[in-house]
Structure formats: C-alpha cells, structure tokens
Image (cartoon, rainbow, N blue to C red; front, side):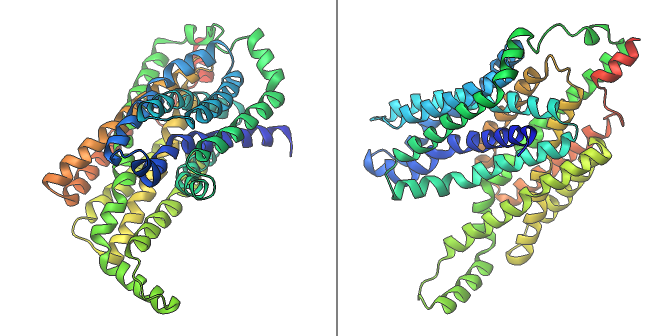
Length: 420
C-alpha cells in the first residue's frame, strides 16, 4: 500500500473511531449500568449530554490550533487523547465520574471533523468522492458502536468496551505519528496558518461572493442537520408504528422457517431500520462522484427535491409502501452529508480551512441537539405525519437557498486571478 493510500486509510479509521467512542456509553447505559448502578436509563443519559455538547463546542478551538500548529499533530493528539480518556473512563465508579470522562472524550472527539476533513480536502483532488468515502467510514462507526460494545459487554464486561477501543486508538496514534512525523515537523517550521496574501488581496466582488456562499453553507448546514437528526433518531419508532403488518408477516415467515414458535417483531423492525440506514448511507458515494463531475449546486438541488418528494408522500403510509418511501427520504438525508463539506473544502483558504470546518460543526451539532426537543414536541402533539410535513418544508428551504448558489464556486485560486 502506497503512502497516500495508507494516509487516507488512517484518516478514515479516525472517523470510524470518532463516532464509535461517542456512542459506546449509549449501549453500556442501556444494557448494564441501569442495573449495576441502580440509576434509571433516562437519568444516566443526562450524564452523556455534556459530552455531546463538548463534541460540537470544541470543534472551533481544535480547528484554530490545527491551523496555527499542525493538522497531522492534532490527529495524533486525537488518537492518543481519546484512547487514553476512554481507558480512564473505564475506571468510573459513579455516574458523575463517567460523565466527566464522557465530557473529555467529547473534547478529543471534537478534533476529528475540523482537522481530518481539512486534510482530506487539501490533500487530494477528487474531493467529493474522498469526502463521501470518509463519511461512509464515519457511518460505519455509528452502526458498529452498539454491535462492538454489546460483544465486549458479553465477553469481558462493560469496562472492556471502553478499554479495548482505547488501546486500539492509542496504537493507531503511534502508527500515525511514525507515518506523518516529517509532515508534523514541517508544519511546526511553517505553520499552515501563515499569512494568506491571496485572501488579503482578493477583490471586493470575490469577497462578496464568498460571503454569499458561506451564508448559504451555514444555513443549509443547520437545516440539513435538523433533517438528518430527525430522520435517523425517529426512524425506529416510525417503523414500530408504520410497519407492524409487514414486520408480522416477516416474523411469521422466519418462525415457520426456524420452527422457533416465537415472533420477533422488535428484531425484524430493528433489522429493517438497519438495512435502510446501510443502503441509504451508500448514497454518499454516488453524491461524492457527482460533486466532482457536476459541482455542488445541481447535486444539492437534486438531493433537496428527493427529500421534498418523499417526505411529502410519507404521511398516512404503512407497511411495504412506507418502507420504500422511507428509503427514499433517507437516501436524501444521507446524500446531503458530503455537500457542505465539499463546498467548504473548495472555497475556504488553506490557512483558515480547519477553523471554518470547526464553525461548521459547531453549527451542525447545535442543530442536532435542538432536533430532539422538536421531535418530542411534534410527536406528542400531532404525530409523525406532521413531522414529515415539517421536514418537507425544511427541504424546501434548502432548495430555495441552493437556488442562490453561484454556478461556479469562488476559490482561493480564482481570488488570486482576480487580484492580478
């Protein structure tokens, strides 16, 4: 394997671990701690909230430090820091202690998105496909967290669910340090954020266009995050309400095939949700390829239209038709993930790219947190049909914003031309 492919693989492993570490506690709390510590599940989740807050808030300082010091150096800090903190968290004896550990895990987890994505978008030309592949690895971390944690709980106890991933992450950090030590040394001698004369000399027209694109990016980031969190968080409950007939038929067929005499409706519904997530996440690869070929404006419009159509069709549907329509809107929800990261990678000056990614993820994770009360309030008062219509409206806002994007994104290279 050549150095470039090894480098990209390490960045992908980092994205996988980033999302894995943030979700270990969710499974540990659900399966073990509520019994072992005698604390209610809802009460335990309150101790995880500061960690998710840190996950978003510390993205901005992480990006600033990376631009001022070294992006590769910050990736080493990420791997080793999150691994050590996870191991230390395994020794927690009280909910407060584990909450403190989760907060520090969130701080180190915040490093990855602004720093890793800045490296991906600067290092390779086929930016869209690279971001999409990197995103799929992150989704695999989300999907694998419960599976890996559950296995370690059964074969070593809940503390091992923090220890073994921690040891693995530290090992990856050592490998990364050895692989990128020359790059870290070069960054220290010539920081990434050395004054960017091109940006300073850019024309007023270029700066105006850049502000316009940035406004659209952050607006669509916030709205897209609400759509993504609402769909991924609520989908199992949606399926529980809408797919009972289909699930019963599948369960009965499985019962006849296995002769178990047991109907596993929850297992079937969970499996259907996992399949939808897995298939829809592959949309990122298609979108990544299209971004490199057609640019973000037309691709983003197509993704928004997909969401508008399928969200507006979902109210009242059940069973197989509801499953098919859910696949449609989840393809739209997953497909939009690489687009804003692509636009930031193309438009942001190299000197400030990690910081801008930091701001993007502060906006994104704040919107993610705000989505949960929205889901609860709408569901309690009107049900999921109203939520689908709200999400169709959100997709319409995205479409309207994307209409104002220029056909050609402003880039540091076009700024240089304009300055001449």
